[in-house]
Amino acid sequence: MASGGGVLSDVRAFTLLGDPSSGGVQAMDDLPVGAAAIPALRVEVGLASAGTPEHDVSFSPAALAGPSFSATLDASTLPPGSRDAWARVCLGETCASASVPA
Image (cartoon, rainbow, N blue to C red; front, side, top):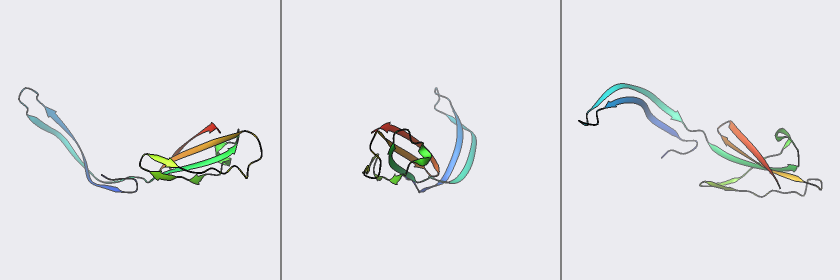
């Protein structure tokens, strides 16, 4: 099985028409796609004062272990008050972020 950062080779797309009564299958089309790169997965975390917009949050890489991640967030550089914990997941250069009160 290919994983993030890997390449799938000899990819193809096809359509078949099947007859359930006879079990026969007729090929309709077959399109060789070639190789497809699987973007690398990364998770980043950040901690910021409550209400800080994402573009002002300082993110750090998290450790990945299978479907889980772990990280340590350091609040010592932030002023006292409410904080938001942020997580950003990226597949290649496509990212999505979310925050929760910390």
